[in-house]
Image (cartoon, rainbow, N blue to C red; front, top):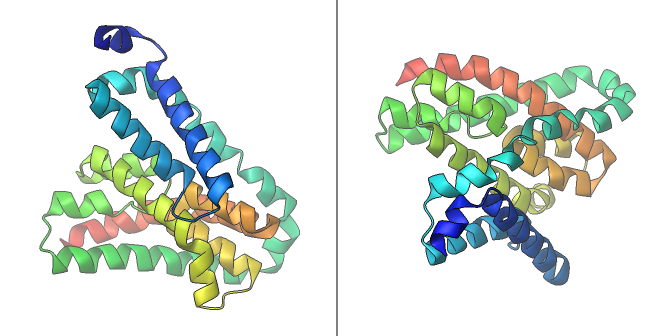
Length: 230
């Protein structure tokens, strides 16, 4: 049975999609923030691999086809941004300042935590790209000497936590402006958080999409500077 699963070309893709569908079902049925589809899918995939005793490398060989869609899916986020182009022009300075502040806060928090927990350079730079999309974060981590696999895990966890808590945090701090909500979510939790922003509204989704691209570029520049601090 194990040999059959390992040799199957689409085993990983089928398990991943089935796990995500299970997550969507639970989310729609119970409507709880903790039942995030990506979180449920991750847990289901891990459980399946453990129960079937399938190594991650074998799983990834048949699941990698899904990851090919990551970049075009990210590019498609430009569509809601284009639809809100006039709003972008009207609030250009505030938007630029907000994203820059978010990126700086992300990098500074990683630096302070690294100092607090006495992380070495490799561990430190591994965490620096935590708030940008995986497609960019892997490259940043590799360039700075980080551990790419851990960077991927950290990025995913950051996105899932952002998706789960975004609405609650906005309510807690009484953030009601759609532009501010979108920028905060996209800057802090990249594409996974943007799915929550799109649920909140078109403006939130558009601003979050913009934040993904701009925050990614600023993080590439900022991380190269912060990497030299430890």
